[in-house]
Every structure is written in structure tokens, then in C-alpha cells.
Image (tube, rainbow, N blue to C red; front, side, top):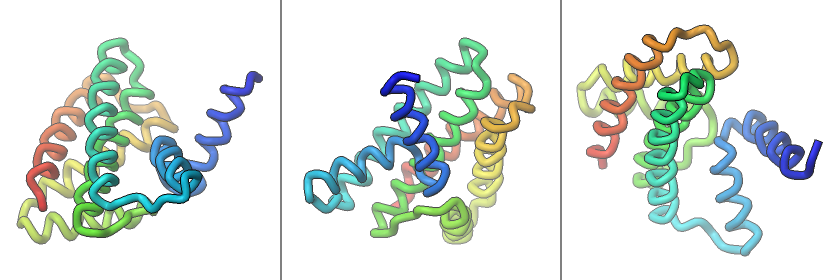
Length: 157
């Protein structure tokens, strides 16, 4: 096992342990290493940019038939979009349960139950990354709802 593969494995393990995405760990480590605090506005920008990138990556994986990677990238896109809204409010969501609590709050604030429904679909995709049980059609349908959810989240202040 080469150095990059070992590093990637360690990063993935730490991400699972902390309930963060690997890219979030890299961003935090980079700022800590520089002795800088991560400005909340910059964090919002990082989360939004990564969310957009993950959504594009998911489409590419889906077109290639890589359902496992498409599932995880779609989940990542949603998780980061939610974290972006939270960061914009000065909150940092670090645990999976805190994502659910925040989604519930957003749904209640807006009166939009689709926010919870669409997030639930994203959560199923996160599980699919480990279980690989969903069909391509199911993932494609869920992906459409995820795009709707991300669009809704971009409108939230």
C-alpha cells in the first residue's frame, strides 16, 4: 500500500469517526496548521463550493454507472449545503444527528415538509454507499430531489 493510499485510508477512517467529510477534515487541518481560525463566511464559501463540486461529481459517477460513488457524492453535496446554511447562521454541525435537527428546524421555519423528505432520501444514499442496495433508477429519482433540496437551501438565510 502506497503513501497516498495509506493517507486516503486514514482520512476516510477519521472522517467516519468524526462524522465529517474528508474534505472538511482537510480544510480544518489546513487552517489549524496555519494557526488561523476559519472565518465563518469563508466556511460558508468552502461548503458551498464543495457542495457544488460534489453534485457535479455525482452526475459524472451516475453517468458512468458507479452507483456507490454517486450515492456518496450526492449525500456529501446535501450535507455540505446544510452545513453552509448553518455556518451562515454561526452554527457548526459536526454530528449526523445535528444535520437532522437542523433540517427539522429549517422545515418547521419554512413550513416545507419536502425539506425533510428530500433529506431523508439523501440519507438513504449515504447508507447506500455502504450497503450498495439501491437501483440506478432509485438513485436517479433521489438525485432529482436532492437538486431541489439544494436549490431550496441556497434560498435560506
